[in-house]
Length: 394
Image 1: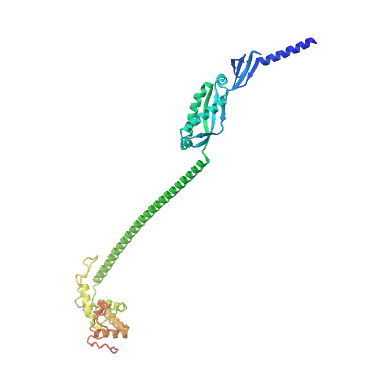
Image 2 (image 1 turned 90 degrees about the horizontal axis):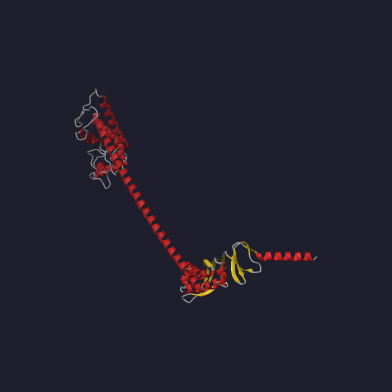
């Protein structure tokens, strides 16, 4: 029984000694070992053996990067405005011994150092610079903190400012200013847009007017060119027609009977004309036709160039009708028939008007065609005095 008790006691002592001898340190941690209150060594991550009841692990330091967010701190700017600044610090313990024995509480020390450094930096800036110079503030804080915490075994990796809150009155004024600036920019942009729109519209109207004017000019030029070509072609056609008629008349060897027949065929059309007065005197047709034959048969009225053989005749010379020329006899018969038809078609009113016109000296009135005024009347004999009365029917 006593042996069993001794065995149990020895087993307990072995277990207790092992627990005091073997120390396990987690990853990214460092153990500070003290022997009789004095720093002995630093335990790394893993299994470590120490002297039991002599060495003691006093502190376990976290070697990972730590993030500390400090509460907002009031800071006075250069223009005596109080702003609230909220900061975040990223730091890491690089020397566990210095972090343990050089500073009592390195987290609190970093917080206080950050606040004092922030007040120094922001105190040299006005509100506008403070709001727009966050990168400068971050760089200044990181430089000062890294230099101050180096002896503590701490490295400051980054300092960030989460927010800068000005006083409520300043915030309202800033909001009004920003609203006014936005309104001003909106008005400026609207005016600029209107100006650009007006310029573009005017430019478009100018281009449209220019194109319309060019189109109208080209159209007018084309119309004028077309009219010119049409007039030229019309004149050429009329000239060729006249030349062809004169050539045909000359080649056909016309005589007085043929000309008289052609003239009598035109009498109905002359009577239908728009002239006020038309006088046709059959007794003088021979003389008129003799003059017309002279004009046509003259050397000036007949074309000088011809495509075929032709014989020049004189229309002024009388044409002797012989019994062996049946064409002449037929033409004379046609002339007599045409004269009779013209006399039958003449209306009584035309004969009265012609008689009155002859009574006044055959002077044409206003609007009377000159060629119509020179012709004597058909129904009034040449020797009949102009009485203005209707002659008796023949």
